Image 1 (spheres, rainbow, N blue to C red):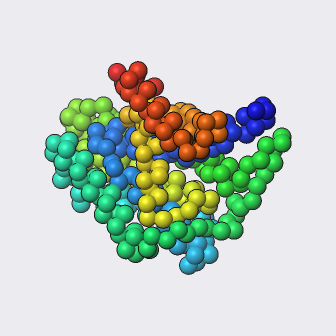
Image 2: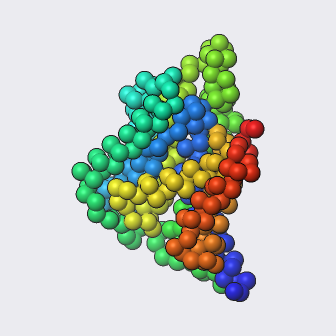
Image 3: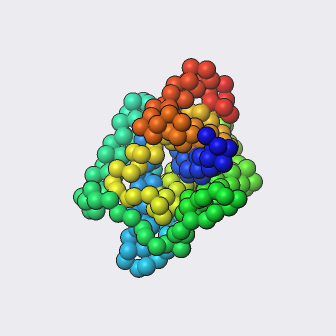
Length: 288
């Protein structure tokens, strides 16, 4: 295998890894603030993809142009899910929390199948269609745009958490909910905000993916399993850990699929997941 092919493969893994990272950032934020694993997170991504598709199909709006609207829609959906379902189970046993978010996953997927049927849809001829050649390496413009968008979105979340008062309140709630309440920070508002941001991150990833990935009701399952691996590798609750781990998982998946066989890509990623659980259960940047 030539060095050029190897570099092409690694960079392709980095591009898809950036998308994995963005999906995982939303997942790890919800867990970091509330200690709740959101099994319906992939369905937020699916709704983001459908939002992008229908705005394109009905109103000829390019997916990138619909990003602000999709962010608002998914942010509102995340807060709505928290207020109607999650708020009732915040202090419930972990098993109840797991069944609740798993039930949401089934519900959202069923709604999508009822409304839009199990058909595969695509967004064609968007503004980021085509390919580019750089130093002899070939890349799809949609993949490059998605990778750049994922970096910007992840960077925006990191800036919000680390450079704003509201982000500091979120971080304080994640560290110690009772102490944060004593300092006057309303925990339920912080929980709702975490769900809104988490859903918005998945929605952004969905819009970016819609420019080159098929859209169907079960598409969330394709990414949520890998997102769990990314979160476990990066450390539950760590945004920077999720970003780094997403790139690692993307490179491992693509490179492993190229060297061993595409049918083994998921098995390789899950093998990495098991290895992390055995050697460093808290992840790369998680708290021991």
